[in-house]
Image (cartoon, rainbow, N blue to C red; front, side, top):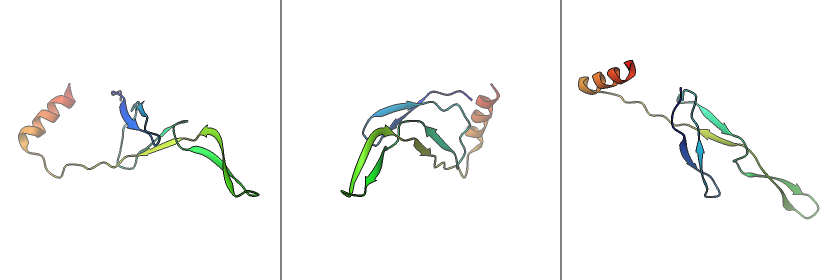
Length: 84
């Protein structure tokens, strides 16, 4: 499946484009390498966090809601689109 990329707003306010080349289902999780939170370790002596500047992976979990009802006219349009 090939579709247009979607825009995702990251935790630091940037917008990134993420390609969606696979089929998405209600429990799908998309992983984007290097776009997550900064990794860090705890400095046990000073009780401070030490950031190494590397970003971890961003996990995108999809919450999909399906239609409960669709009328005949709209159903026919969808069938026509999918059959092309």
